[in-house]
Structures are given as structure tokens and as C-alpha cells.
Amino acid sequence: MNRPLIAMSMTSLLIWATPALGRAPALFVDSRSTTANAAERLEKQDREVALRLSKIPSASWLAYGSPEVVEEKARDIVGRASVQGHIPVLAIYNIPYRDCALYSAGGAADSRAYREWILGVARGIGDRAAIVILEPDGLGVIPWHRTLAGDIEGCRPEGKNDGAAARRYEELRSAVAILSERPGVSIYLDGTGSSWLAPGEIASRLIKADVAKVSGFFLNVSNFESDDRVIPYARWVSDCIALITRGGLDPRECPSQYSPAAFDDEKSWAATDKAYDRLFVRTGLTRDPSRQKHAVIDTSRNGRGSWKPPAGAYRDAEVWCNPPGRGLGRRPSLQTGNPYVDAFLWIKVPGESDGECLRGTAGPADPERGVTAPPAGQWFAAQARELIELAEPPLPAE
Image 1 (cartoon, rainbow, N blue to C red):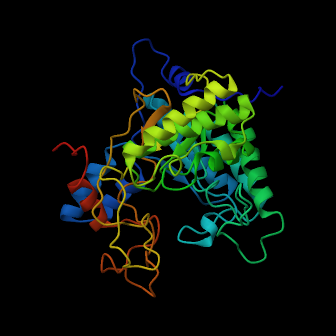
Image 2 (cartoon, rainbow, N blue to C red; image 1 turned 90 degrees about the vertical axis):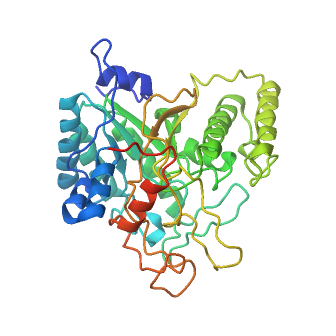
Image 3 (cartoon, helix red, strand yellow; image 1 turned 30 degrees about the vertical axis):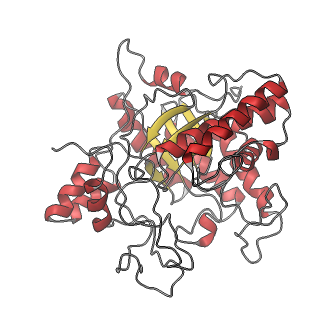
């Protein structure tokens, strides 16, 4: 008989992973990570930089291969973590038409292939503990998707508009159903970030993707928004989900970082907090973070917040793509001190490129950096040095 699909909370996951009384939970540091592998190919200062970063826990990305290959990879990572009593973070990134065929193009051939691949991941995890980051951009970039206002979003692949958006939700729900059967897994769905979708927009998508059956949502993956912005956004998304599902609120009524707050003025964000307070009173609900959906936040590169490009310099500044002058953020931790946030994680591997950023130019060089950046996921030594030099909080000296 199958187990019921019940979201495992982070607290339950920690108890599952670290049953010994008094034993503090720890995130897994993979000695065979892509960062450690990069260090073996580098020399001098670049090697030292990669080695320093390889000692800090970051996510292991499962993004390629057959169901058999990904099963073995998942089994290897989770197995080694389990032996140490540590918790691995697995970023699952293989949904059909991922990244709308841009810098990180790829993914499974179709829904059936994706389901078989997810089954491979689940078999590899088995009954051991893992945090699963399910499909970065999976709800932020959906082919032929209409917003709550009825507008078709920018991802419009030719020949893919026949039910493409509905298939994306079906694929995610299927993945949730499969992975939720693993007793030690805590799953998080794509919640985008504080500079992207309004809480009502992403909350409605999370609900369609079965967020009720998982622990919550992840924010700021491969992005640079500061904790001061992302943490309030996490609270609003959680509150918005509760107001929709328990109070029948129209998601378009959820206050946001854009209204009543002014996005560029963080002091105004308190107005959105107060607007949520009023909605809880109006709907007769009691806010209860312990029962609501929680976030995990990617702090791998947000120590300096987001980049503000020179005004009018680029047709498309691609502020998310290898921006200059950024630093490492808060170190990964399962202890957050915030009732809405389960963990601060390094999901995007710091030091790995976001892609060959062109910023609306013909390229091939990134006009802001003056070099051609490595393809997405490959080591970018200059950026890695920068992230350490500008880390906030600073990275302790070795």
C-alpha cells in the first residue's frame, strides 16, 4: 500500500536524518562536487579559490542522463551523505523545455520521459534523507503560460503552444507524487524571487503544482536579491497561499512588492505587511507560520544584493547573468531563526557561470565584463574570485 502524500517538514526531516539525541544536523559537503572537480583542473590562486568554496555545502545538480544514470548518481550522493549522517541538497533540473531553450536549455524529451527520469531519482534516494529543490524556473518560466491578468508570458516556443502550460503543471504534480513517496525527502517547488513575480501570481502556480503536498518553495535560485528583500517576500508568498487555500481569497488580491509597496523603496515594504494583516482579519483567519508553507532561500551570491546596471546602457541588461561586483551571501544553514524560512542554502554553485551573457548585444563577449563568459554551469574563475573578495559576511581566512 502506498503511503499518503504528506509534506515532510524540515523539522521532521532533521529528526529523520539525525536521530541521535543531541546531535546537530549538518548539510552534506560533497568531496566529489563540481567545485572540487574544478579545483583539480585549476592552478595557483584559482585552485585555492575553488578549494575554499568546495568546503562549504552546496547543492548537487541532477540535470542530465538516462533514468539509470541519474538513479546511480542520486544513490551515490545520498548514500555518502547518509553514512556521515548529513543531509544532501539535490537540485532536480530536467523538466521538458527547461529555461525556455535559453542558456540552460535541455531537459527530458517529453512528459513520459520526465516521469521515468524522476522515478530514477526517487529510486536512487530510497529511504534516506534529502532536501529536494524541484525544478528551478519550473514555475517562473512556463511555455505558453498566461498570467492571472490573461497575458501570455515571454516563453513562446514555436510549435509548443498546444497545451504546453497545462503539461508543465502535470509534470510537476507527477514529480511531487513520486518524490513524496520517499519517506526522508523534503521537497520545495519554484517560488521565483522578490524581483520577479508578485506573491499572488506565484502562489496560484504553486497551488496548481501541488504545493500542499510538499514542504514549501525555494527562492532566489541563481539570483542575487538580498536577504532584506527575499525574507519578506517568503512571508508574503506563504501568507498568500494560506489566504487563497484557507480563506478563498482571489490571488490577485494578495499584496506584493509592487503594491502597496514601491519595489525600489524597501522602507515602503511595511505597507505590504500591514495589507496582509488586514486580509487575515477580513477573512477571519489566524496567521500560523508553523502550519503554513515555508521557504528555503538561495544565499550563494546575494551578499551584496542585486546589480543595478548603468542606466540605458543595455537593451537587456540580464541582471541575473554573471553580474559584476557581487559577493557570497549568508553561509548555508538549517538554523534560520525565522518561522517562514526552513534553510539558507547555496543552491546555485558559486563560481559556476550563468551563461554567455550578451545583455542584448551581438556578443560574443559580455559587454559589462569585457570577456566571453563560460557556458552555463562551467567554472568562471574570475567570478569565483570576485565572490570571495566581496563576500558579505566575509569568508573567514583559512
